[in-house]
Length: 154
Image 1 (cartoon, rainbow, N blue to C red):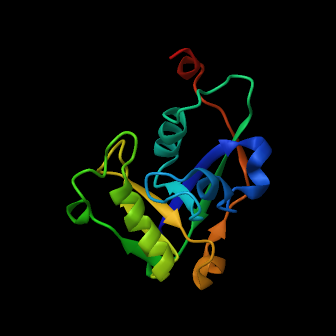
Image 2 (image 1 turned 30 degrees about the vertical axis):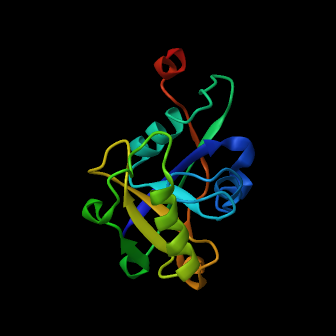
């Protein structure tokens, strides 16, 4: 059964799957105003995704990890071969956001599997909380997550 991980600040755990952060700020796979939830295939990749965000990690902030799983039938896979050549740009370019925006608008699936820009052989998952099948995604309880202290001294 496919699954994913999300790591975020503990104070925002109640809204972990609200899609509000991505809607307000946009991301690699969505434009500002398009609500979706980002997860990673592995907890380690989720940690790298948080670590490489523009705002630095802070030792005094508490983080949590949440898992989610779903049936294979809920996923659409976007292979690397189908992506625009600019999909890994920093900052993220409009072509990859347009792909995610179109997926959301067309409501083709509840989950979209995309390659990670950090490690393209691994996947991130985009969750559409407005999709009728969103209710079939099983979300785990938040558990404390601690980054290795060496990560705070970058």
